[in-house]
Image (cartoon, rainbow, N blue to C red):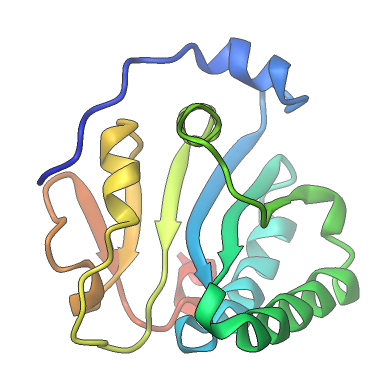
Length: 167
């Protein structure tokens, strides 16, 4: 797949380092904040999961797209409103700054599962999902050609993320 596998990390030590409870269920997502990825839809779908799983922590490892900063800021604002409205901001770790390779590896390695959502077929394939594979992190991807090159050991779900909350 063209990406290295990172060395195995100690999840317990990493959670201590980043101040995350050992018993938390950490779900991580990754990628540029752009409107076509429907982050607002994805995060709205997570709200019932926060209620169902009291130990759930959502770790968003996202960044603003340099060629689409206005769009990225709009997405950020929409998602922040969803978190604030549903009083889950304290259960979200949201990184929007650049993460070097070490911090990216550590943040993925302290997670229990990765999740990526792209409700539309873009004609391109995401490179970001390979980070989950490289960190040996089980991952769930929406059923989109955007994630077509990663399938082994990964679960693809319906395009409607809200269906996950029912399962």
